Length: 181
Ligand SMILES: Cc1cc2nc3c(=O)[nH]c(=O)nc-3n(C[C@H](O)[C@H](O)[C@H](O)COP(=O)(O)O)c2cc1C
Image 1 (cartoon, protein in one colour):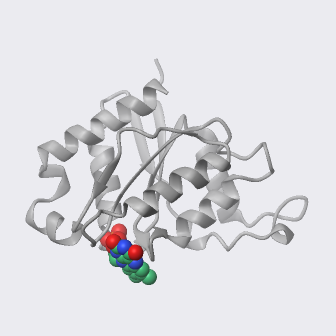
Image 2 (cartoon, protein in one colour; image 1 turned 90 degrees about the vertical axis):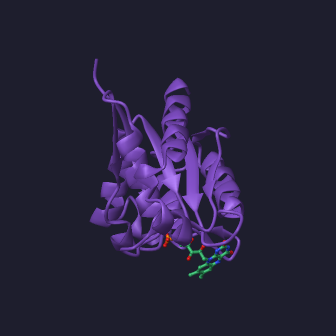
């Protein structure tokens, strides 16, 4: 049986990103028959507008993003919280993947949202917004389980995510829910 594939969109571009660390933990938590991969190059995807979309030539990084989502069985978004919502990186990625209207790469795609923030609530506003927006874009959003890591910089410095058995169990459960969807 071929592997269940998951494309992970990481909403923070910084090298020390705790959301990237969480995404890497998700990859490590995956069973052998689940292949999860971070979609690289989101920093190269221009801000969406219709004049750089079909029928005009589509920028290669945007094409690559659409292809990575279309080719995957499911999508996971790992987003930081910026001023109470998802990062612009994630919003832009969703906008690209929502077009052509009704036929975007996200349409019908099982999708879960996770994330970390340095604040005490773990970026739940950002994650709720990402669920709403991805749903409007046509994804089949998995509302449960939620996975928000608060105070992530200190938490991951104290215990790296891949050494946190409870967190790894939650990530594995999230993948199982995504697969069931
Ligand atoms: C522009 C900006 C706005 C932010 N707004 C929030 C916020 O509304 N809530 C919050 O918990 N953290 C906020 N933060 C701090 C983020 O939690 C933190 O930068 C980010 O989640 C870290 O993610 P990363 O480690 O993956 O880069 C903000 C950070 C920036 C740069």
